[in-house]
Amino acid sequence: MRKPRKATRRVVAVLLAVTALASGGATAFPATTAMAASATASAALDVDPFHYPWRGDNPRHTDGHGYYRASCVSFAAWAIRSDSLARSASPDFLGDARAWKAPRTTTTSPRVGDVAQWAAHHAGAGAQGHVAYVTAVHKNGTVQVHEYNWRGSFNNHQPNRLNVRTIPVSEPTRYLRF
Image 1 (cartoon, rainbow, N blue to C red):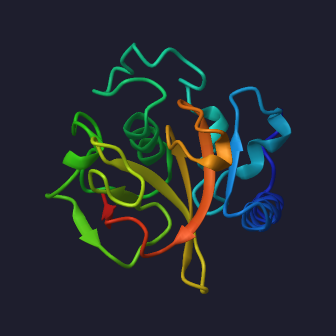
Image 2: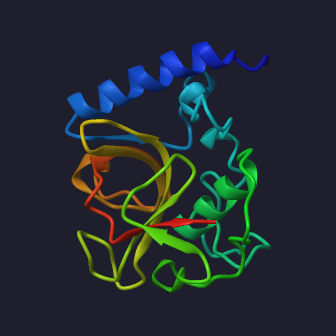
């Protein structure tokens, strides 16, 4: 399949963001979603979440980078390794989401390519915390994130699935810049 042009991916990304807002701020994509939706990737970074190699995989196996497959940390680390940004730190072997800390730069002002991080038990995160990859930052004070393994009413509390959510910038505890 030929890779869509950047302009086409941007249009699709905007349409998905509008759809997510209309559906209460989140869109869940099961592992079987058609490849036509693969253009949901961040246009600026060429990260296509449908190329995540452990989609729908057994979460009891590790991904070779220190994480369980189809977990939030595995997906976020894969997205960082897959985007085209220069990085100063590796996202591999950092432990649970709550452990992703310094020496990475932390901020409350996200940019595309950052990792949104939730502390343990913060805003719906579990005991291990949560991380998600930032794919868009909007002027209205929201960010779009791609994530795995966030359970919510928008995805019928299904684990190990890709979700695209638009959330307030203030919802995560912090943002990490690698």
